[in-house]
Length: 238
Image (tube, rainbow, N blue to C red; front, side):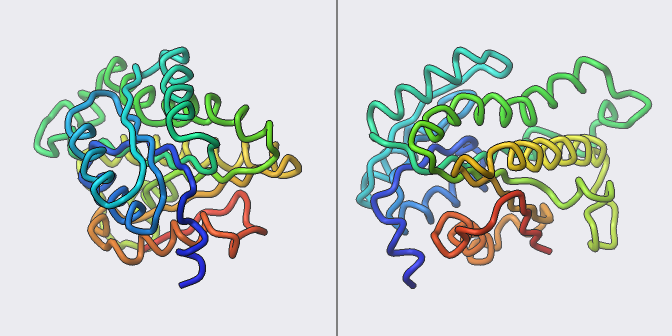
């Protein structure tokens, strides 16, 4: 597949590698030939993952950031670029589903605290914003680059457009963050379309997280030159 071959040797920063979804996506992207700079909120499994990616035959390095602290994102990006070299792509794929117990009453709307609301928005939507702010100057300097925001389909209707069922107790979290990410992505895309940097998204039903082939193909399409004309678009996987 030509679109896969053209990605070999390109450099990508990836936010969210500690989640099982992120780990699998990173492994598949490494098999395509992408060098990966892994960023997350703690090292957890990212150090082991980085070593595993090197065994696949690509360059890899991991770094941590502090949610809400712009300087930590800037330092992590600078460290990764120093190691990998020129930056081609950014993928924001943090997903907090594994942090939430659906049986916990505190996630019901009548018991949801403002503190938890602020924390999850800062950790998910806020981190996407700080990530793109840290990466964009490097891409604008050479007038090229691609950014992909991973999102959930639940951001479109509150239950996952077309899925036919509610997404659970924490649907409010998913919907609010997904909607914020969609608005952020499309607004940024509109601003930088003339500057050579493309911003797009991939949204999926949480139950499809393990559908690796479909998800990988969507990312390869958006990262490759096949989608040179695509900006501000969201590929929705159901």
